[in-house]
Length: 61
Image (cartoon, rainbow, N blue to C red; front, side, top):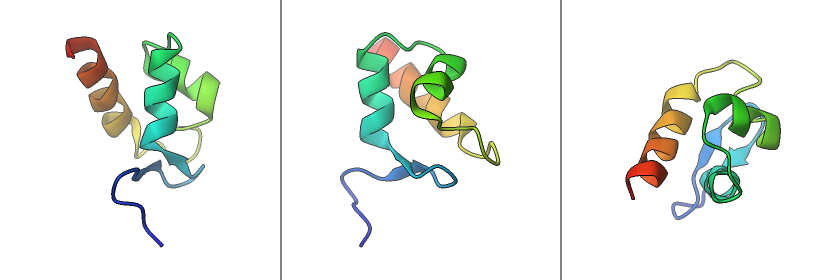
């Protein structure tokens, strides 16, 4: 069942928004940092823009 409050960002690796935000809270600042921490964006790559958008939202508050 889909979780609207915690959407899948990386479909290939099944990484949810909460995992990416947690990685950002733990110091990940770049797509490469998030990739290393969560394995997101290591499949097809289609989620890169979504991850960048989440990181930007964390940076700008």
